[in-house]
Structure formats: structure tokens, C-alpha cells
Amino acid sequence: MIKIIYIEAIEEYENVGKNRDFSIFLAGGITNCPNWQKDLVKSLENTDLVIYNPRRKNFPINDPDASFEQIKWEHKYFRKADMISFWFSRGSLNPIVLFELGRWSHFILQKVIFVGVDPEYKRKQDVEIQLSLEKPEIEIVYSLSGLSKQIKEFESFITKKR
Image: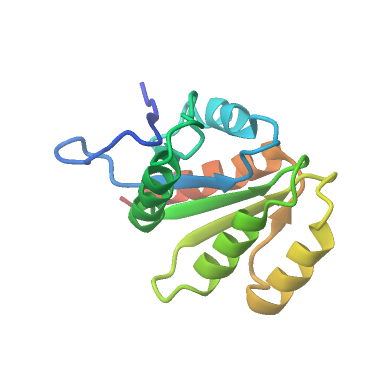
């Protein structure tokens, strides 16, 4: 049975000998946002993906070193991932996610990118315009189920090619 490998910040993961080398980073809002990552991970359970989730169950907010450790982990696993899914969630303007989308959509090492926008996200039009100018080939979806469908279809396509 196929089962994901789930890696949550700040857990380390090396793919040595596990025969899994196709991975996805879940980029998107955390602070003041619903736990959309939990729903997306659940919908991807029957895939053969390694999933890097930056949302931790317990973030030590009183630890002054926690933010550095978190951002360092994210930097490492953004680079490691073959794919990045971006979800612009309601509840926040997601300023870091906007930065990350800009960075990775223009990054020299091309990554497979999926973009979803919650219909209630207040800067939806900004994401649409920016992507239409920079990456018009990316199809924006407006639900987590749509994002999951895109990821599964691509994962299935890659798996068949192996």
C-alpha cells in the first residue's frame, strides 16, 4: 500500500534507501490561518510523496531561537522539495507566502509549483495578476480539493514515467 512520508518542521529527513525521492513543500499561511495543511495532507495520504509541512503542532513562542530554527528548516526543505504547493489562506494577508511565491516562481532552479487561493483571501487579485504576468502557465485553483487534485495528477504522471 502506498503511504506518504510526512515530515513536520523541524524534523530532519534524509531519503537514504527509502526509494522515495519525490517531495512537496506545503507553503502557506500559518499564523491566524486555519490548519489547511492538515486537510491537504489527509487528501494526499494515498500518494507516494514525501511531504514537508512547516506548521508544527507546538511552536515554542517563548523561545527566542525558535524563529531562526524554523526559518532555517523551511529554507532547507524548500530547496530539497521537488514541488511546492502554495495556499493563500483566509485569516491573514500571508506576507511571507507572497514573498516565497515570488522567490520560487522566479528562482533559477525550476520547481514544479501549484497555487491555490482561498476565495476569502483578501489579496486574491494580486496573486492572480502577478502569476498571469510571471507564470501564466500556472493554473490557480480556489479550493484545497482542487489543489490536491493537481498535486495527485502530477504525482501520478511522474510515477508512471519512472
